[in-house]
Image (tube, rainbow, N blue to C red; front, side):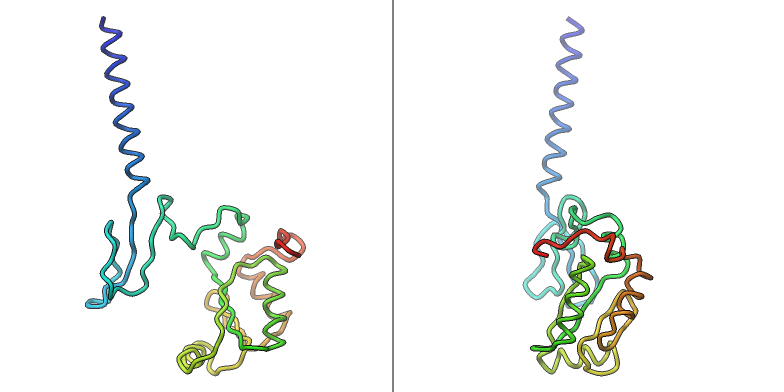
Length: 171
């Protein structure tokens, strides 16, 4: 009789734990910037319509677009510490070469096409002028395309060399 009661209590506690765990997985967390104060907010409810930089965080604690479990560990760690942003122009051959180099090394990067006046102002603040291609690897800025400079900066940031990087799909 005591064994049956103990078993019933254990199963009840186990069921409650599973229910709590499942509910925490379904909960959404939001990160956003409050326009009134400029402070970063973390909430479990959707932010107001005028919030800036809204990001939904998944159950693993990563923003939905930040974490790729298929990336090798070395690339994932380097991209967290030293994200790569490539600024390009339309129909720009050196920009294509810069993009191809990053793709060949399987470097995850954000590509920004410089088209508007606001884009040009942003790039000018970052690298000193509006020359494309320009790349930011963490805080390091490279103006123009020089394969040796790109490789050196990527190596210093901890990205695997091209020969040890996994092949990019479609190549």
